[in-house]
Length: 228
Image (cartoon, rainbow, N blue to C red):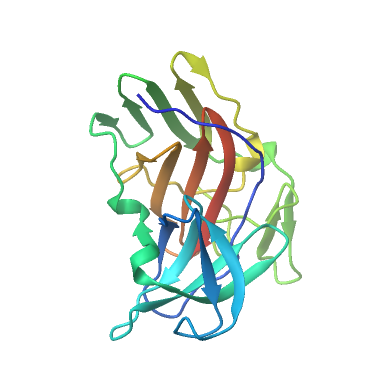
């Protein structure tokens, strides 16, 4: 049974690498890792990432130092950390019991119950912002993920999480700008006192992204969205 704690921050990562990129977390006995300006401990420290926090990284072919991007919502950090501190989210322990359909996934174990579903996008229920060339630029005042200039076909309808029988409050803005969700590979993962709901490979063929929602000791903490 997993335990979690709490703070509430919402993060969006509007950044991508040209090569293969991945979401990962920090694992470090000191409780944090320094982000370096270059590949090596003799280079300047440009930031710090706490253990368990998520970030985006690019895995090089011949270096033990990974180029990373990290956002606090206000500040954005780019630099390098050693690969020994990097744990890809898709390699964390996860819940194996999943019931997946085209429109819903339900994930349950002895302490959590999670369900997420999608429904057809109805433009009448939203405020659509367009550019002069008629490209969709915003939906409800926010730049959408999962589309590239057009209207979405699907949006997230329901996002419900219970931990030890208690429903966890998740703000609608934590998922309302994410469209064309793909539930095939979505799963719930764990690391120490944190839980991650990880939803990779979402798009309509353009505007791809992956998302992770982070919980700590039973409370929603933040999210990361990587636009591919």
